[in-house]
Length: 170
Image 1 (cartoon, helix red, strand yellow):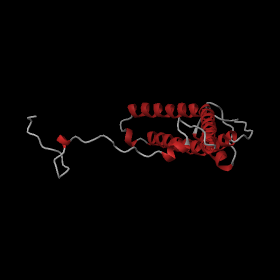
Image 2: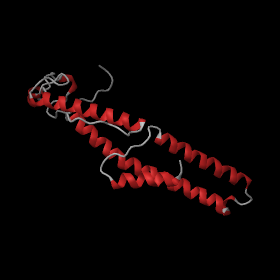
Image 3: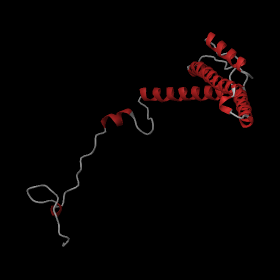
Image 4: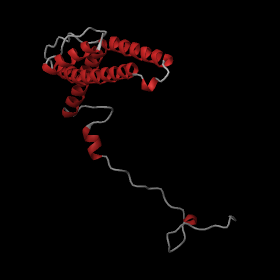
């Protein structure tokens, strides 16, 4: 894994509406690559007289930041494609989720399941079926019940309706 490979992946993802084939460990490999760069930078910084003035340390830092930006852009582009495929699968279309990473496969499955579950719930509501113990007609006609607790005369001052003030003797 290196920055050129990451940028190639980013370019292919941008140029296609389809999900490009990636190895299942892609994000893990990127994480290992960035971790190795950070370790290399830390070793150079420990050995340098002026780590902040070192051109080599600065270049490695730039490579780390660029790699992080590129992989984020790749992820954002791919996640949209994964969600679109999951929505199609949930709608009953035949979708072959290929070329996904481990993380993307889990996202695909969860999104498809959530959409299918939500569809079933909506269809139940439309049909007036009991959802979560409440039918649509129960919620529409439920009004708060009036308070029928009688007020005690000793708790209210006559003619004012205000609470009675007591001196503790009773």
